Each structure stands twice: as structure tokens, then as C-alpha cells.
Image (cartoon, rainbow, N blue to C red; front, side, top):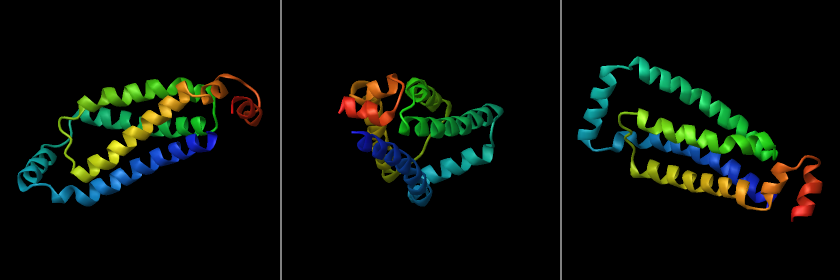
Length: 146
């Protein structure tokens, strides 16, 4: 179970990276009307609010990366942070006026969302939840749990 959990954490980050790559590779294949709209939005420039949200997003990505390392190592603080981090990420979604993506990008990110749900479920609702809550040797704890 420990191995599966760690694989899910790595797959989660792989889908994020792959999603960005697919987004960049396919964004110009959108319908012409959508491309013109996107171009018009770019010409309007970045508002101070959008700049603040971007900075928050960058910080959030770094904190999520650190939290993933904590989850990978079964640290209690990482378990405590995982839900608030997802809540913050979800709360930031409406701050974007529009998010244009191809179906390929949507597919990759949807797979990532499923993996994130599996990580949350395993963190709180599996025998691994006890590993996060107890101190001591991880190996000893997993032997007791599994």
C-alpha cells in the first residue's frame, strides 16, 4: 500500500507536467474564434489582481511540492495540510476570467483530479491514515498496519 501511495504522488505530478505540455502543444488548435478571443484578452494586459493571483499560484505550487514530499515520507504535517491546500487551489479557480483548453488538456487534468482524489482517500480513509498519525519508525508502523 505504501508503494501504491507513493506511485500516486509521482503520477499526480506527472499529470500536472504532462497537462502543461499538452496545453502548450495543443492551444493553437482551438477554433479561430477562440484564438481571436484569447489574443484580445492578451492585448488587454494583466491587471494588478491577476498579478497577485499569479503570485499566490506560484507560492501554492511550491507549497504543494513540499507537501507532496511530506506525504511521500508520511509526515503528519503533510496530512494536515493536504485538504487546506486543495481548498485554496479550488477557491482560486474562479479568479481566472476564462480558462481555454483543448479536450486533450482537459483529459490529462481530469486524470490528475482522479489521482488527487485517490491520494486524499488513501491519506484519510485507508490503513495508511494511521501511519501519518503515529510517530516512530515508518517501517514498523507499516508492518503493524499491513
